[in-house]
Length: 294
Ligand SMILES: [Zn+2]
Ligand SMILES: [Zn+2]
Ligand SMILES: [Zn+2]
Ligand SMILES: [Zn+2]
Image 1 (cartoon, helix red, strand yellow):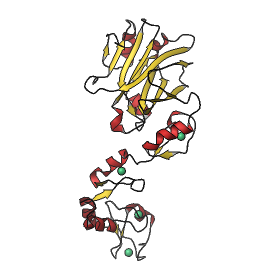
Image 2: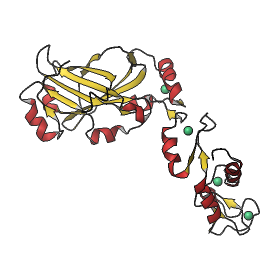
Image 3: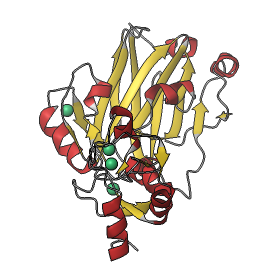
Image 4: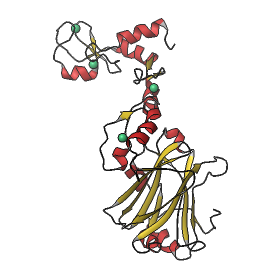
């Protein structure tokens, strides 16, 4: 069906004469029979082809034909060659590798960056344009750093290059809960292929809290992830035990998610007294008292 002569013929009929986009149902026509897309219809008083009045007449025949063909992806000009029926094209376009995305630094830093482009070019852009010290770090092992002066008005963002991919980590305090999440700059379907291990500890062999969770996609809404509790969420009273001289040392590592071995998200506490307050207030399930093997 994909580029059969019939398909091309119907697509030609579906091109709106005003915006030149392919029309999707509902499709309306003028009294003479010229078609126009719904968006342009709302802006026009007269038919752009014959200047007749535009009553609200639907073209059901063309609508039915539209349901029977495959539309080219909206990113065709950018290089996508795929076509889909109407019921599934939106799903593809949201995930299309040729789709343009804004620079992730708009989300993770205070700077405004005008760049937008496909995912395949994003890494080069970030490396070349956001390379000031501290902006991003290239790692083969865990990121070990410290957070200073944690408060509700400060949030922390860090870009990490690891495993040949871009990730960014956010930390913030909301109310009495400390949150941390890792986002993969990539297709949603690929984000579950990575996990992050978050760990705060007093000193070697001392109390520690460690989480092991799946990364999110940078297309996910940060607030949604935090409010949905799908990330590290620790009662601040508990975090405070690990803060010394206003500094919280912690460690985070991204690794490949072995789908056979690591299906569960894991949370470990190696301390007796964190469990109670945490259990009551943050409401996260799956707390275990096992010792983190790493
Ligand atoms: Zn139009
Ligand atoms: Zn007309
Ligand atoms: Zn596409
Ligand atoms: Zn940028």
